[in-house]
Length: 102
Image (cartoon, rainbow, N blue to C red):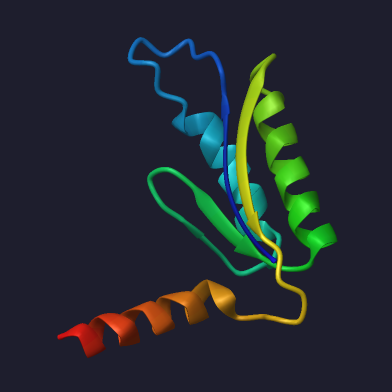
């Protein structure tokens, strides 16, 4: 299973509305989970079993909830039993297809 998710507080005391401190707490949970992961400007991707991934998403939400009374979660999942290594496999296949296009 691949999950792309974004979790953040819905409020911020920062004058610019920055939420990076709370997001950092969530990403720390992800990185300490041991699951394959990557974080970009908008989402964090993880790969693992249903239970592993949902545990990480839950714990990341709890980390944000520790500093905010309200949490926003956006989640997209690719549930494909029997497949692993798809976090990089999908990109490898895409790069190959792009190379073939010239």
